[in-house]
Image 1 (tube, rainbow, N blue to C red):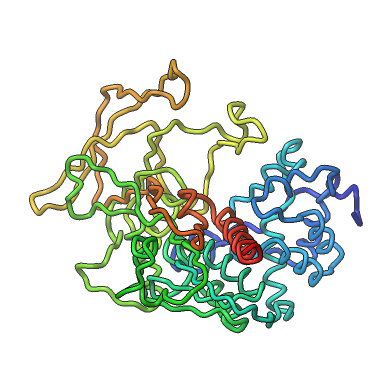
Image 2: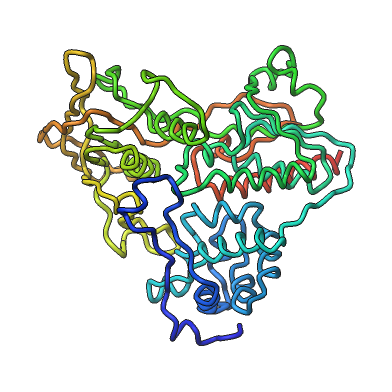
Length: 459
């Protein structure tokens, strides 16, 4: 490394967020950027460890020490080329990845101040587009055709890698545009959709074909039936099923049918479509404007609902979680190399939100017009399971009603049940693993492309 002692003298410096009073009035990205000098100085903190745990922890195997060194020396193009070798879409992960690498950084484990790998990654990707380091490749074709079903991060990664290996790739997507949850789940204030469009244009220029508004039947595909809606899949040599986890976990308690009780993606996907120029009728519109909002579920999707509700003009926002409140800063119950389960405060939480833990939802309470007006909750006690495994949940009998005019259920997604496919059909991303991270989906897409390439070379 150019400055092997920088970690001793240079503190961690994050770009931070736009001021709350500014950002809650629009859907622009909330995260700011450091200037070039500060960014290179942050890269200098990487110690080039003998055993780089960051490289080990990253599902993509990103070589953080190598591109951090290039960034520190101002060699932006070399940094991008190193990053591109392992990551198809650093402009995505540089914005929304939870940075498993940083939680494994030796500086994090010893001082609590990891190298700013995620922000560095995003800066490298953006500089690459600005300076023209993102070039169009024209691979030699091998005569094989592959259909990728689903244009989420796993499908896009598989399509990108297969295309670069010489396959003729067509991506078939049920929605009107590519991206999957990147486009229809993650709010624009975390990931501007122009970032996705920019990458799709590169892929199209390199030869990947995209077909939209085309839902297909996986059951028919399993049977080799290419009639009706599956006619578009006829004639391909292999298939990638990367349809994600489309079914959200619901909450079937009394009052679930009341107006104003929504799954999280009903809010998030619609809002993103509105920002894309799609119009919805007054009765269709899911909005938190002038309403008391309750978000059930304490994860990232719940956080996204909070930020969206603020921008829509919510009167108040409350988030409840059935699990205990995690410790702040350090959790002895999840030592490294486990993911540290600690309290996470997002930019959306900072915008204003009452957060409560250990609450179970008993029922939704409605008014005379069939609209939700409150939610009955009850305290939860988690006791150790004598047989091991998940603790046993018990209710403590302490009930209360939380007033709410609109409720969003953000409790995760169900792993899809897929049919048995022929040998030339491969499953990538969340469709096979269940709901996971974008970075893991990209890694799965890359591995699927390798498996398909091996499949044909061994035939």
